[in-house]
Length: 100
Image (cartoon, rainbow, N blue to C red; front, top):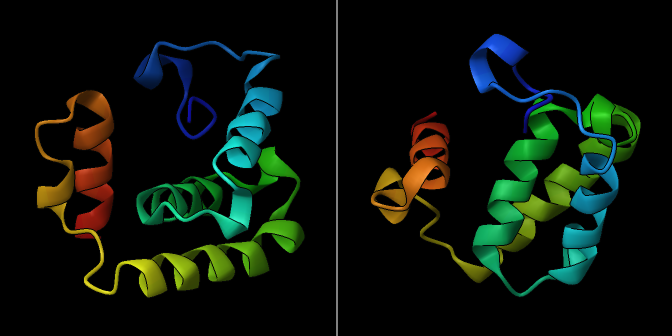
């Protein structure tokens, strides 16, 4: 997610391994067919924020819809901030996102 904000916010420089690693993790968790509703939910958020880093909006817009739809099928109650509380920086970030 260091692509989403500038260095002075994240403290992270560009990492040439980040994009291939992102796709490796995406595939490891089952990509769009994942049975992990939280993975689908947070992946859709990340891809919504920085689709240009992941291959472009044309590729990700329909994929984001499918990720969100599958996440809702697996967990109809969704993900409120309380799901992420107490889970470190990850939890803080996605609790904030879930409030939106």
